[in-house]
Length: 157
Ligand SMILES: [Zn+2]
Image (cartoon, rainbow, N blue to C red; front, side):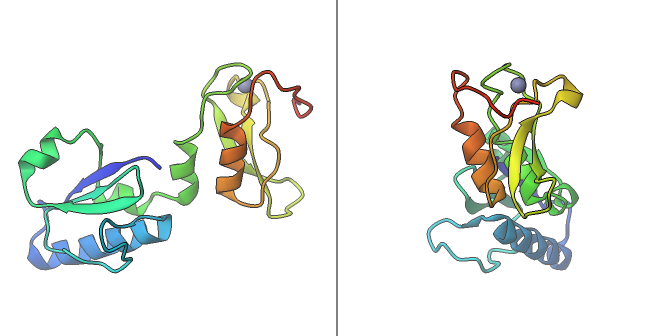
């Protein structure tokens, strides 16, 4: 998953705890957990910085120096709370193995069968190659990221 860092320094004590808890609970729903304990319980809510690692682990920071040298993507609390699982997974999609463009997107199956596939979006200049269907968002992403451009593509539109 992508990584993010969140500064809570603009919030005062009680508000910070509320915002931190909300961001952490959203992170748990998206698949992050605390490094070390592996817990999905809000903690360290007075810490001024929270990190959401690409390895799926949450960390907290107390020092602005750590925050400034870290190259994770900075995000606002509002931006983080608006992240969806789909938008996170979207960022993990590889370039199209057929045309090399980065316009692939996750789509639900058109027959509403609760399946998903990744398609190189021709409306955005892509070639229409598809990953094949999977029963989860993650499964579709896996299928897409392991496709080889040398495979015969029976699903090009
Ligand atoms: Zn393509």
